[in-house]
Amino acid sequence: MITIKSEREIDLMRKAGMLVSKMHQFIKPYIKDGITTKELDKLCDDFIVKNGGVPTCKGYEGFPCALCTSVNEVVVHGIPGDRVIHDGDIITIDVVIGYNGYQGDAAWTYAVGDIDDNKKYLMEHTEKALYEGLKEVKPGNRIGDISYAVQKYAEDHNLGVVRELCGHGIGREMHEDPEVPNYGVPNTGPKLKPGMVICIEPMLTFGHRQITVLDDEWTVVTLDGSDAAHYEHTVLITEDGYEILTPRLDS
Ligand code: MF3
Ligand code: CO
Image (cartoon, rainbow, N blue to C red):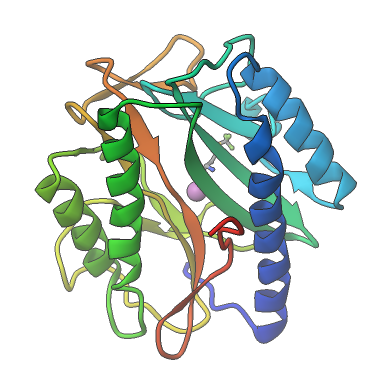
């Protein structure tokens, strides 16, 4: 069931989204050569709790941490641990925060120090693929319009579209209907209506789109070991378009 949020709920979701944005802004300066993913997680977990939020991922289907930290060939769901990040790496920080009973969800890929041109290309065009999807967000359009726009942009730029995972509705729960795939057919799927809130989250690869899951049953990596990037916003459908509830505070 796709829920339509009331004005009051939208206001609470705006607050949850803003805390997600602030956490991303908070952690950015710590993303440097030599830090472990588990240190990043601890910093964020403390930040979330101090600000009255709940780290929703922690305990979700047994996931142990507040953040998903996905380095280089890790696509999503990297578990924070002893892995040290180094200059030249890319790392996706993905977080879901509950605030007053509502969820905000956003992922960004960050560069650690100087990265090579291939990684820059992957990051730039994965973020742009998200914005191509966003252009389709308005009442009357359908989920498939978003999906197609993301896929078309990604494939036109020779990037692989991970198909096994997708975006989603969000509200009291982090995953609600509808599913928001990153590939699809225009003018198909559920119709977008004002008051719906969805997460759009392209996961793109520099090489082939095939993935596999590691023995920890969480970490999703590219099968060919190529790099992956992931950008996600929580987005409200408005009367005439959309509002990003997890705005970037650094640009
Ligand atoms: N943020 C992810 C999403 O967009 C979910 C994290 S999975 C978890 O769906 F298990 F860590 F919660
Ligand atoms: Co999400």
